Amino acid sequence: MESHAPIADPRWTECLRMISHNISEQQFNTWFSPIHSSGFDEERRELTLSVPSPFVYEYIEEHFVNLLRLVLKRVYGEGVRLMYKVTTDATNDLTVEWEGTKAQAPKVNATSPLNQAPRPLQELDSQLRPGYTFDNFIEGQTNKLPRAVGLAIAQNPHQSTFNPLFIYGGSGTGKTHLVNAIGLRLKELHPELRVLYVSAHLFQVQYTDSVRRNTVNDFISFYQSIDVLIIDDIQEFATLQKTQLAFFHIFNHLHQNGRQLILTSDRPPVALQGMEERLLTRFKWGMLAELEKADKALRRDILLHKIHRDGLHIEAPVVEYIAEHVDQSIRDLEGVVTSLMAHSVVNNCDIDIELAQRVISRTVGIRQAEPITVERIIEHTGYQFQQDTDEILSSSRKAPVVLARQVVMYLAQKHTRLSTTRIGMAVGRRGHATVIHSCQVITDRLATDPQLRQQIADIEAGLRG
Image (tube, rainbow, N blue to C red; front, side, top):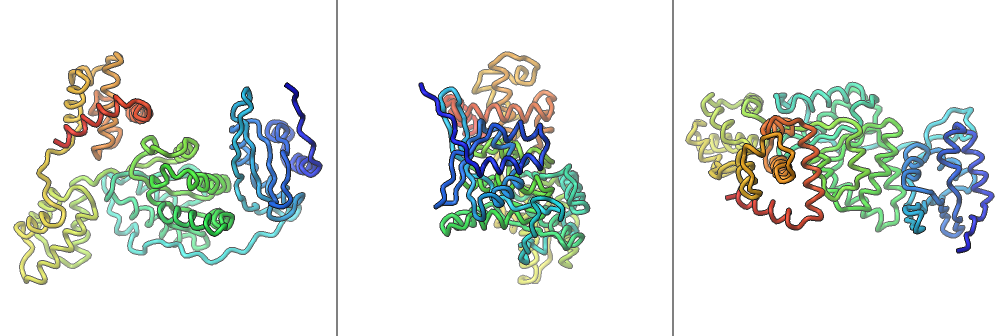
């Protein structure tokens, strides 16, 4: 088979010369020497670079994309669209094409050979919700760590320890409230920062609209201008590969330039099926913080705060009753207090336990079904896999026992509000890392093992009773 050497492109050769003057010799030889131009389409203003592996592509995009963009502008002119032809299987000569990041130029000093003036930025509406502040985000044992990390970021947004901050927890645990509180405190302490709060759904709608209008470059450039980007419900990106690719480029640019990213999800990264592995890896670069379901003490404190704020008078036994029975969501707590206040005013009656019972039953319901606990999960899983409870909780490494134990941890993470640490303690006093690993193993197997999918479906049906 006859081989053909790539045709030298004088302009790309000039780009390489300029790049070599701005990085070390070792960096140049490692990352840029293996790259060659596959051609420049004058009509489309599109340059395609052949890259020997996905790893080289990702490293260039993460560490040198700004320099590369500046050089391309100098040599090829304005509006160059960068494409990569990445070799994924050298033996069989298989390649894929990926579009490059639309990176903005970094600020450089006047003596830099690549100096250019920064673009003026437009005024930004942060989209933050003014009612969600730290003052009314009540601290308790189940949210203490995420709240403390959020305050630390607000004090010093330029540190890298908590970047990105990935907050996860079930619905109604206060994720949206907390990230808005962080954003508002940031705006208060650092008014010069461009802070933006956006839901993952709105981000996806904006991206889709930019594709339809052929303004993707503007879309990505706007998001790359943000100093603190807060995206709520990131799990909605799952299976949306093009949206994930756009966010991947935005994430890389912001993180490389020391900008803060704050993300929320209803589950930890390990349980985000349909999300690209390279994004999941980046989500774990900084700080993972779980917002657990509010315990009774925190629910009581939230109730007392709201009662005091709204000028209500509710006797302590009624507060205790509400805190005991409204245990799924902080939003439910607030809704019950609002309903009690309305009933009290309209009917000119006191707020007593009888009224609280009626309101709770009509608004959120008093649950009668048996709750799903780790103990019940162990029982049903043991029956399905024919393993005794003692075996599941033991240190046995027999394959059937290990599988049953991993299924227990997976289902506990999915169906209970317990932290991974508490799940581990309940399943034979195992560690947080073991639970995370077990959930990942089962998640991976479910994608290819229909028998296991059916077994888990049968267990879940039994749990629902």
